[in-house]
Image 1 (cartoon, helix red, strand yellow):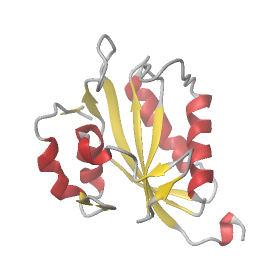
Image 2 (cartoon, helix red, strand yellow; image 1 turned 60 degrees about the vertical axis):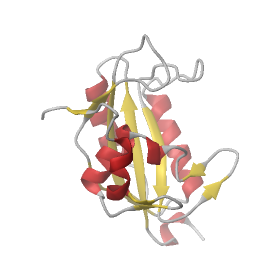
Image 3 (spheres, one colour; image 1 turned 90 degrees about the horizontal axis):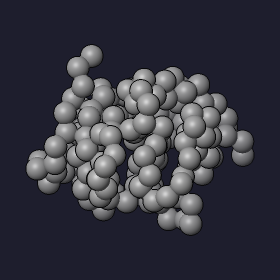
Image 4 (tube, one colour; image 1 turned 135 degrees about the vertical axis):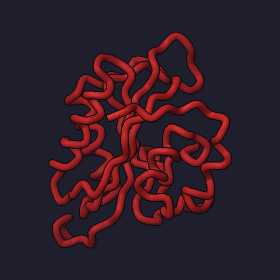
Length: 167
């Protein structure tokens, strides 16, 4: 079955950047997501500023979340996300290196996927304000398999600093 014959799936993608003009990079990534084959950009959150998690000495991140309707299989969607990152200069020099663009597949319908290359729901997404706050903005009733409704998980990340960027 080709991707165009497959049923449309709802996918959520986290976007982040902390090198160069990070806000511009995230906004341009919304456009790139909208141009993916067999995919429609349904919604995207505003932009949020957060400190890097687990590292020091790096610039703050600009984060957002996008909702997609896609006929691409999860693995093909991941490949497309990695290609967008690469086109925008993403390198993977070391674990938690700063990045020009980071695109993570958070949710793919209600599927649970565990392969060497892809884990959905994205690990620890339910523990991160930089994911939950923008996700709750566009999909508060979305469910993270094994963890519950996004809006209900916000209480667990209240102590994490996150600031909405005006505009």
